[in-house]
Image 1 (cartoon, rainbow, N blue to C red):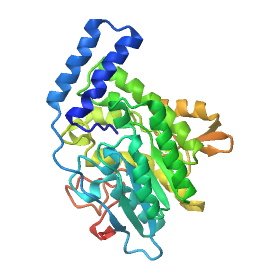
Image 2: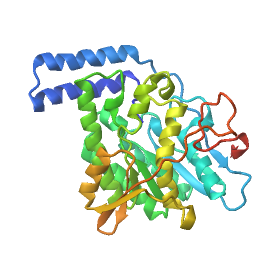
Image 3: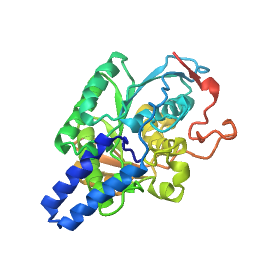
Image 4: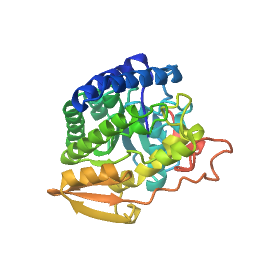
Length: 338
């Protein structure tokens, strides 16, 4: 699930990256110049941000009885749902509706993610999150750390600390690691190759930090790359960077089994189709190369799991023409604002 916040400030990473790549890889002046030219070309293509994403906060599954489960969504524009137009199309709404329907329990959602956030912004989001005493936190972060050329160690430390604080508050945590920014079509080689390398390195480091802090990760990488390449008009929003409603829904479908596994017990938990236990660094490296892989703590080791995606076929309950596909089978009565 690719994400870049398309403002002029965000092209600093390209200029910095060109200088760094030239310094460490011995690129010729011609190659560095090509990187600058690619940055300028992409910038002309991408429209500026016009409006914040819709909020999806509220109570989901009001038809179900019981105490609501409290869910918080933290991170950057990919967590906020930048690029969609209706609250029900945002990742938070997709996860809240899916969890509510599968557990047959109300879910209260607080979307705390901020468009443009880097990992250094997570402490402030966690400050607000813990006030809500959440049962589950979903974090999507990392794309802007790459585009801003943030120090990787510092970004990973902020993420690990956020997970640790949430776990200490009794909250379960699922993190979607840094997407593969090399999958974004307006970015051409060789700049695309650098973006892919930085994204994967950050995703592997994120996996180690999150699992050590007691959370679970799902590697996104280029998980949706083939779908996005085959149907860019459907999978991308107007800015050609952020996913469309269908793109977000497919990403939610890939993460939902891990979300349910961390919440559910007995027959409600998804059954993995593959499982392996390895040293954490090895598991992190393997997960980056096998998008869709869950990595979870297993004592001194890490457990890798692969699940079947939850269905992404449209549900009969979804109105004709609704771009929110049937990952959750959303209906209007699922959501109550407040």
